[in-house]
Length: 200
Image (cartoon, rainbow, N blue to C red; front, side, top):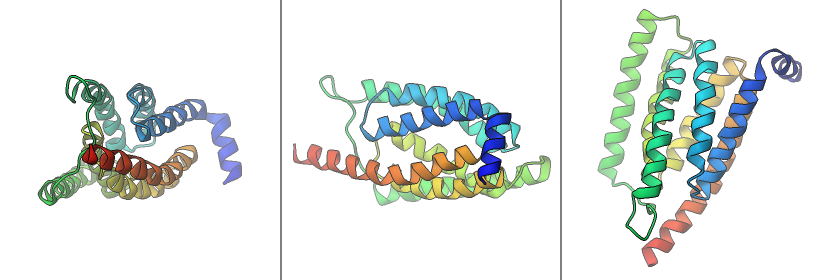
């Protein structure tokens, strides 16, 4: 794997490394509820849009376009979504909201898997579809500061690790391994903030 990493670095990874660096910055800033996370997200996803298309992960590439739009939406929500005096607070979803979200993910995943399998040369269409549609819903949850987004990300990012290893995108794989670790800190930080808001 070390030889492949060195080869990948020499061939075409400067762009991937920049995207990974900004992606890590995004998550670390999001953990701390810093609005600058959305600037880092915009840059990272702009680069990943082309990288994923190049390795035939079409759903992942399309997801990056969605991320670009959500970076703008998330920035707006975090800046203007709260009261006049306060930023948007962290909240939780009801069981019904989670069931709706999971149903949407399943239906969208099966639908896009069918079309990708039938009409494209997409690689791992089921996993590609699942991680994409899961991320669509979960990114919306981040923009709305829903606490449980961290649980969704744990599942999605863990599945993504296999996807990127299979496509020999090893720096992106390392990014998602780091994501899985950071998720636990994100959950703890947001849970603490949520409880403080509830007491207040």
